[in-house]
Image (cartoon, rainbow, N blue to C red):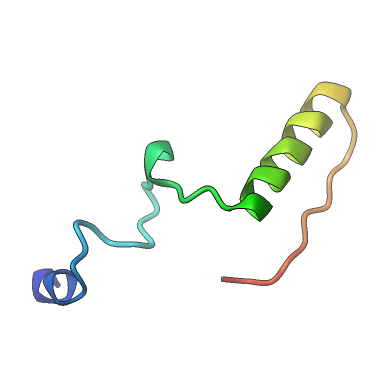
Length: 54
């Protein structure tokens, strides 16, 4: 596996279950989703999150 990481120039596995928060790539859709999570957390209620996979 180390050869595969080296081939792509990666320091770690990109889809590790133990991803650290500081390693998350914050895109605009990600930031919007997080804002919606925060809103529903403050207001209470139900949230349905949908979107394309990947």
